[in-house]
Amino acid sequence: MRPKEDFDPAAAVLAIKQRKRRIVDRYARPDDFMGWIQSLATLVPLSGLWLVVAIGAPSSPGLVALATVVMALFLLRVFALMHECGHRSLFRSARLNSIFGFVFGVICGMPQYVWAAHHKVHHATNGNWDRYRGPLAILSVEEFDALTSPQQRAYARARNVRMAPLAGFLYVVLNPRLTWVEGTAKMLAHAVRMKWRRPAVPMRDHLASYRSPHWKSAAEYRHMTLNNLVLLGGWASMAWLIGPATFFLVYLISTSLAGAAGIVLFTVQHNFEHSYASGDEHWDYDQAALHGTSFLVLPAWLNWFTANIGYHHIHHLSSRIPSHRLAACHEEHATLFEQVPRLTLGDIGASLKFVLWDTRSRQLISVAEHAQMARPA
Image (cartoon, rainbow, N blue to C red; front, side, top):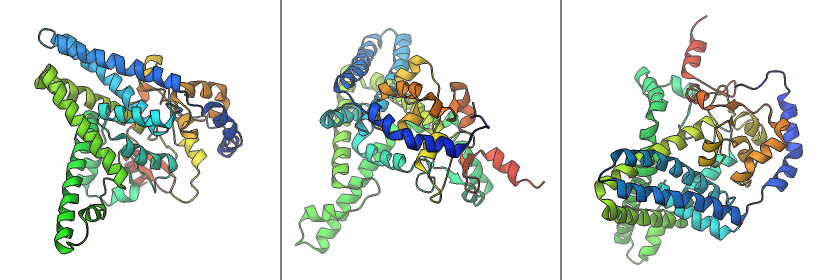
């Protein structure tokens, strides 16, 4: 559903700027008790589902299949709560956010500390496509035109919704492990070479001098390493308890499905018909929150599994607002958000087609739309 045409965008943005401080002061109040409730309501059923898999694997493949699908939904919620911990909005306590963020990160296969640091870049640059191109690495129309025809077809094909399960597997299962192994191997090789050249310098200094595209600090590398070691230990333990074939089949399917759903949700929250997509010049954070972020209207049960992330316009207004308060904030200030693009589950497929950045109109367009515009009159 597209926003109405008879409105003044500048007035809407101005109203947000004038009332934003009051909204944030009222709603950006994390609560430790609610954080515990939300965490336990996620972790306890997830543990129960693994128990169902362990008991049902020998004789009830249908039950195991059903548990796997439901597990994917809970893993999606685990990722959403991990995301909330990164914003320090699940708990009031910074320590609890760190502890549960790490636990959630291990469960969903993502080094939370590193992921949260990268995610903050997205929030700081939302709507500025010069700085951040989203999970699909969107090209501008000029960059797209510079590709060969086979490359253009491959670009569009890779961003088709049918590729989401594969993207989910790569995003949460494979890539975090590969980048850690690759980065660690290159860091050790670098340190050995430097030690050979400068033996008087301590090995610690040679390790610290290595620069990796996968982490920006020693703290990020430590968290990445701890996440992977605990996760690999968890894999080994679960494979021993319920059998490697059963465990890895259920784990890979449920995690890939959850990753696919997460990528799709994140994408449609910013990629939709003519979404606001500015460059550095004239970029405005609040305008991006209103016109470059969608309100994904979901059924109540799916809002629960996604921790209300469909209220993404509120989340980008302030990432400190806890997930359980996003809906109330939207309802109280609904008139402010009348022009936020509203999407439903039925709109997701069409919205994912908007994968090109038109720098002249400062909006996202589809490949088909670009071809139509480029066709001679």
